[in-house]
Image (cartoon, rainbow, N blue to C red; front, side):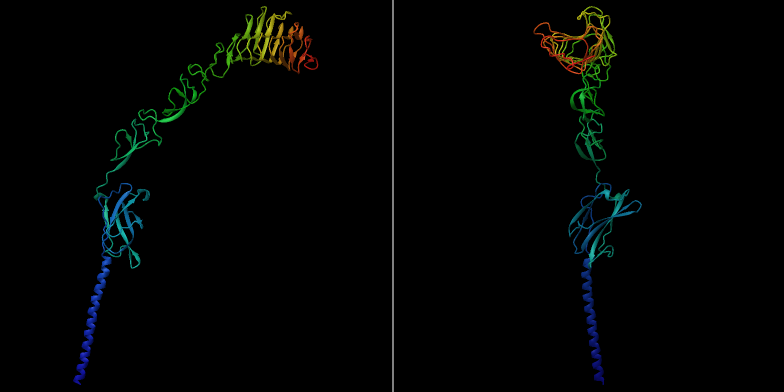
Length: 470
């Protein structure tokens, strides 16, 4: 019995020893496992500022993160900014992550913050992958919570962009620099009024290129070709926005001037010369405008002795009344390519039957290619005298004269839509007493009374063809 009991006790002791051994081994293994697991949770993730301190005023904010050794898997870096009132804003980066013994610098633009948010401190958190899960703040030995107060740092010196501006007019000269501090040096501005480059950085009154025309006489009317001019808010004196001046050496002559009718000068640059009295018209290519009725005191009222001259009486009320002396002439034409239009020409006295005593319009010898149109001539010995020339009469009325039209010479004249009625001698008189003097006249839609036919080779007039009777 005692032997049996002793065997049981031995067996129990052996079991107890085994249990104790198992417990001891388990504790050893558990400790080893715990220590191995602790390596993961006690790895170091150091947050430092590298070789400089953080300035939360600069833009962008620069924050350096440095990691020491460790086997933890970092999936993100979170930087939590806080303002003076305690409001927070979090920046998360999942791409630029430091490996072991590596440093990463983050540049965080101020424009990313909410409107009005001004950070005064920040905290940095690593996001770790623990057993396949991302966790933050679960393990004190693996979460670094380092707060950097702005008041405890030495700010990076402030930098400012400066734009070259020698004359200090706010417009830069195309050069720029970045300097430390809050003020730009002399000759530089921290702002610029325009991105355009100052065209003269030595003169504060001019800064931009404008286009204009040279105005030599400074009457606000220019001339010539468009030029680029360094200017202020407007073109400087001596330049104009237009090129309408016809005489840029005389400030009294420009489109805004008043034309003087007595000097044969085109003061207002309209290309026309205003006249108000009988005179000699001798400026080639000139256009003369009659401003009112005129009355001659001598033999002739107007003498046209230039080429390509136009005399425009404007309307019939601007009457040309010519002298009472013998051999007086209303308009005497010497030049070529003359135009007389819109005129009423009338002798002031009593006409006579001497055809050359009072002549309304006289074409002198060799005055050719002239045009008379929309003209009335009356109370003259001869209304219109066609000399040795090739001329054209259009819509002329030569009624109430002794002779309406007197033609001579071996030339070709054209008469159209004209009237020669109620004359006291002839409506049309063709003089060709010499064998080689034949006036060839063509035209139509005319009305004449008392026509003197050309005798030599009578090309015109032919009743019913070139004219009808009044």
